Amino acid sequence: MAADAAAYLGWLLTFGMGGLLVVQRRVDRAMAWAIPLGLVISLAGMSVGYLMTAPTPDQARELAGGLDLATIGAHSVGAPDGGAGMPVTGWEQDSGDLRVAHFVGLHALQVLPLVAIGLRMLARRFAVLAGSATRTALVITAALGYAGLTALVLWQARRGQALVHPDALTLGAAAGLVALVSACAVVILAVSAPRRAGLRDVPGPPGRDACRPMSRSPRPGGEERPPRLHACAGGRS
Image (cartoon, rainbow, N blue to C red; front, side, top):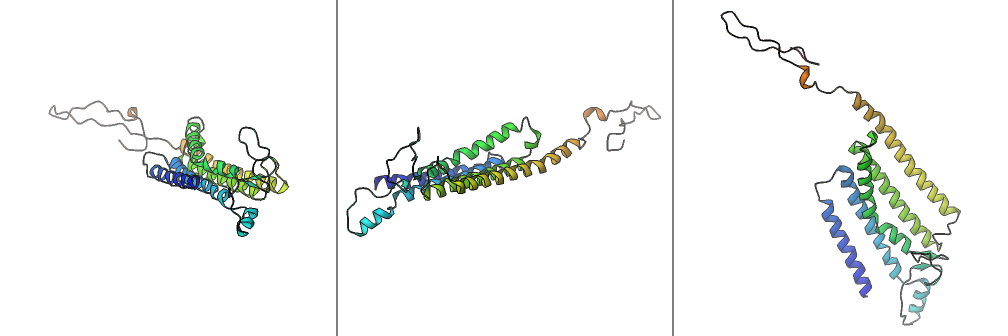
């Protein structure tokens, strides 16, 4: 029960922190989208933890039979917890593991703002990324791809399949997700490139040297005329 309470508290704290970040005004459009989208995906990833606390089918049968179980819930699907684990992460190698989707979704609130920051830094070198609308569209695309990845690894785990042993169906879904996200990014950049090129071709306002005063000419009687200007670019003298 203490672990469940801590998980709910963490969910609420993340929601509160994300809400404070959403109302911040000193962010560009791309970041203004990255934060709430990352928050939603992160909360969804945290909610996967609820599946780990629910009784497994075997545990449900034992509870229905009146047994008093010391442990309820599991992170493995298709095999008992405690099987061979992957290096570093410890995720199951021979069965589905709900912790994968939990981990991936949980960190969306860090990944998507980093994507927005990275795009803004790249905009200094690539003119196609200079527009905030372009970067915003790419952030939204990245968020959809990240949400799709979270759903994919959750679906894989729920089928009792280890992350490192995907079947043809999982690989096909992953390839489709990559192709969809890549196509969206290519279309966004293709539409933005000619627009940025057109903006570069638009003549800017005349500089300070474009209009210079002519020499003053005296009026009859010695009164000096006001200075006149040469014709300026796009205007009259």
